[in-house]
Length: 316
Image 1 (tube, rainbow, N blue to C red):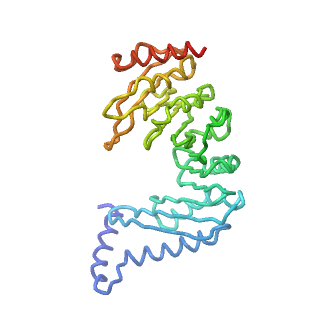
Image 2: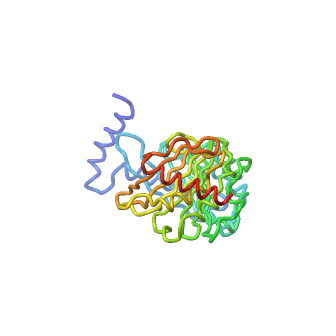
Image 3: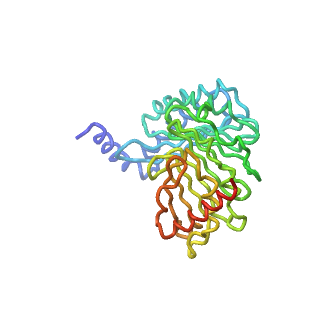
């Protein structure tokens, strides 16, 4: 029998003895650990409050969820010290590696949050703090990505897409995501793999979506590495009602804007998402700016492609 299991069983027996008095040794031990954690974190520079939630587990380590709130506009050195050292110290204090810490603060008018653990949090946080501006509503850092959520705009700025040379778009192995609502249309851009997305005419794509299609659930997603083939891809949803299928004229208007683009390798044009979070779509593979084949399914893709090519030729 493992040492951990023997300890748990022994404490379990002891717990039964104390239950009548309402003083479980597990609860006592957790309370002591909570006090130690709160005392340690509250003593760190810039910390205004600490919130904790413990999910007990008799057969393995308890899971600790800790939120550390900082004063507004904290010194960068104070924030970096916390994201560098706080989690390791709490792991020692509670004797559990199942510790998640969220550090929150406001910088200027931007809400900031950093979820630990994550690789090289100091680099990620210091880089994120440098790009904060009044246009950015919030910045979230996690183990997998940095998310920049912007205030709503009526038109996408010409230089909105981050270049691959931007420090915030190339922080180690982290993905960087830009989220923005443009004239009621939700737009997400995901940067990774050193791909430069700046050549994609995203502003034209957004402008091409008809105003009557900008309903709840309509969105545009531009990925440096999409979930299907891990290549640069564009997804536009909201081009028709689910029950009617993809609207040819709306889809053609969008596809026409990206014909000739050398970056995109996949374009997916879909309907509104239904109550079951499903969408009907038509997909086009692209190579060197041209569509390969007639789309998938071809019977739906062919008329969209023909109309898009005609529109592109007329505008050139």
